[in-house]
Amino acid sequence: MHRGSGFLSPPVWGAMAAVSGAALAGSMAVAGRRLDERRVPLMGVMGAFVFAAQMVNFPILAGTSGHLGGGFLLGILLGAPLGVIVMGSILVVQALLFQDGGVEALGANIFVMGVLPCLLGGAVRWLWTRGRPGLVTHAVTVLGGVLAVLAGATAVILFLWWSKSLPANVTLLQAVGVMDFIHLWIGLVEGLVTVAVVRFILAVRRDAVLGPAPVPDAKGTAV
Amino acid sequence: MTSYNRTTVLAGVGVAVVLGGMLSYFASASPDGLEKFQLDVGAARPAHDGVHAPPVAFEEYKLKWLGDGFWANAAGGIIGSLVVMGILLGAGWALRRRGARPRL
Image (cartoon, rainbow over all chains, first blue to last red; front, side, top):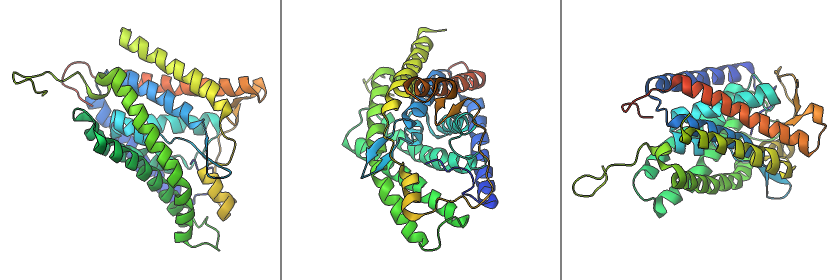
């Protein structure tokens, strides 16, 4: 979903650079005050995982592929601020080292694939922190993955529209319809993969995600 | 380095090698969601001035000096994943707070 260079007009990429820059700066400030050292290795591994997973395009529909976004997953495992820092690092490396995504579009790309899905993931995170995840937690997470991808896809179209880069023969609504239909299926995979990875990481390193195991009090209930 | 840190970093290297270095070679070459939209709807022509980083070492995630086969792709995936992990471990260890109180 990386926009290459030249699709966004200067006011659009400028505004999004400001928004994402502020989000990154705020996240770094929060991390600087409260980052637990047990989160750091998980940040590194998840960064490597999401970067590598984005290279693995899977086929969907006819003649189309999709790849994991990963921001939603990062939001759940690390919370929104750390998720934005990890996603920002990935997108900067992709843009500067691999020419994937225009340099001027970095702010917009960080917003679409980092800020938006990380906020949604951060909202779903608390469901996973409350004891044994049940059907509701799983269903909400799959649905959240779909929503995260659709939110990003819709934002991309709005940026293109605002930049006057949509062709004259389609309306904004048509463009959103086409884009969101393609990404509905990608989002479904995103949601399912996110559930699988969150379950796996919680099974092997629950404390890295949620802090130390809760200490049972006298009544045997975890506090 | 604690055994937790060592194990986790090794897991990251494993992910980089298996997913970035090997599986990515078998990725679908079909246009992705955004590219498919641009093909279908026709918003394919950049209308503004933009900047792409110069392809110094990599092209299409392949290390240029290794051609464009499996090994060039493997080098791109592994180096990219490890660079990301290195940046995050460096930044994270610089920003972290020790002790019981911090929670994030």
